[in-house]
Each structure stands twice: as structure tokens, then as C-alpha cells.
Image (tube, rainbow, N blue to C red):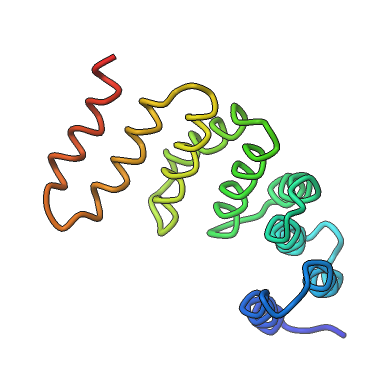
Length: 165
């Protein structure tokens, strides 16, 4: 049954809103059924399958799906989410250096609503690779934007944490 892009996206959104109503295997099956409505190498379908695996504790299955989705040309906010989630998954799978590399590249992209996660997740990976001062600098810099006062001071201190070495 062919459906419109908007209909497919709406059903994906609805399914994600109900994730807690499903057992992990059942949820992955529901996402797989939606993905099967598209080409097997469709970037969005691959991304949704990756996210479903990742969100249900199947990081080893998620990582290659994220990579395939990105290689297939995943775009927009979904692409950035996939990079963040792949990097987090890689960190959890014991590859923090690759996680740092992926997320460092994201810092230079155009700003959007995912800028804070792009700061938070590399901070975790930087800790794992022994670069705690850089991690603190990133986390403090991200936090500085959200304080009711002292934004400029904290942003300055965040930079100086790394410069003081």
C-alpha cells in the first residue's frame, strides 16, 4: 500500500510517542514494518530502524544502520540526530575516539536546536579518552547559554579551563 510521505512521517511520529506501550522486540517490529514500506536502502527508514534498535538497548545492531542511513544521504535534523546517536552508541560500545571525531565535526555545522546535545555528548566521550578539561569546557560553555545571569562570565571561564593547561 503506497502512502504519502506526510502519512508515513505521521505514523512514525505516533509510534515513537507510544514507545513505552511496547515491549522492545514488539516496538522494533513495528518500526521495521513501517520501514518495510520504503526502499530497503531508504535513508529515513534505515534511520528509524537504527533509532528503534538504539532506544531498545540494541546498540550493536543500531550502529551499522546509522552508518547506512548516513551513507544513503540522510538529511536535515534527522541526519544530525543520527550522527549524535551514532556517536553516543559508539561511545557505549567502547569506541570513544570515534565518537569524539563524529561530534567534533558537528560543532562546526550550522546552529540548530541540537547544539546542546552536540556539546553534551562529546563531553562524555572526551572524559572516556582522558580529556576531562576539554569535556568540562564544552559542558560549561553549553550551560552558559541557559543561565539567567553570568552568561558571559561562565562562557569565558569555560574557555579558560582548557587554556589554563
